[in-house]
Length: 275
Image 1 (cartoon, rainbow, N blue to C red):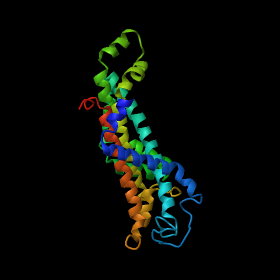
Image 2 (tube, rainbow, N blue to C red; image 1 turned 90 degrees about the horizontal axis):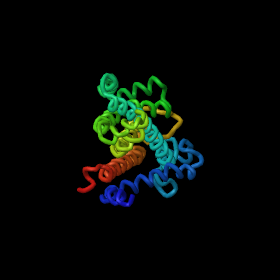
Image 3 (spheres, rainbow, N blue to C red; image 1 turned 90 degrees about the vertical axis):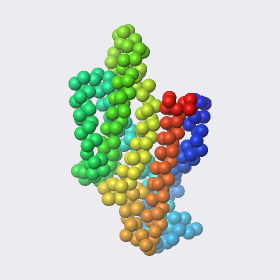
Image 4 (cartoon, helix red, strand yellow; image 1 turned 180 degrees about the horizontal axis):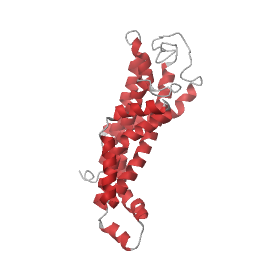
C-alpha cells in the first residue's frame, strides 16, 4: 500500500487533483447543512453581486448562488458516480462473457456493443432522457447507457489476454467453475485497468450531466451546475457570475478527476511501475 501511494502521489498535479476532489466531496456531503432553506429559496434581492453577505451573490430570482453551488456539487457527484457504477457493471459483464467464452457469443455481444458505439452518444442521451421524462433516475440511466460500451471492449480484451494463462488453465484443471474463475481469478487482474478507465468515465459523466441540465433535460426540482449556467445565460452581460461560477466549478472538478485518473494510471499500470 505504501508503494501504491508513493507512485500515486509522485506527481504534484495528482496531489492537487486529489485535494480538490476531497474538498468537492466534503462540500457535497456537509455543505447543504449550512443552507437549510435549500437552493431554491429566495433570500435577497435579485442580482446582488458577490459580497460579504452573499459570498457568490444572488441570481435573477434572489436565490443564493453559494447554496446552488453546494447542492449542485452533491447532484453532480451523485449522478456521475451512480451512472459510472452502472456503466462499469454492465460493461464489465458484457466484456467478461465475450472475452472468456469467445466464439459466437463474442460475435453477438461485440456487434451489440458496436451498435451503441456508432450512435452519437450525446444525442442518444438526449433522446433517452426525453423518452424517460427528465429526472435524476433518467439522467443516470441515459449516461450509463451511452458510456458502457468502451468498458465492455476494455474488459473483453483483458479477459482474452488472460483466459489462456497458466493460472487459469490450472483452475480449469482442478474443476473450478467458469463463474468462479471469472470472478475470483481473472477479474481481479483486470481491476487496475477498470479503475483507471472508470475514473475518467466519472469526468465524462459530470460533463454529460451538466450539458443535459443546461438544456433543461434534468429534474427541475434538483439544483445542478448545468442548470445554473442554463438559467443564467440570458443575464450574462448583467450578472456574469451566474454562469462563470458554476462553469469554474465544473472545470475544476473535471480537471481534478482527470488528474487523479492520471495518478491512478501511474500507480496501477504495470508498464509504468518501474519507470
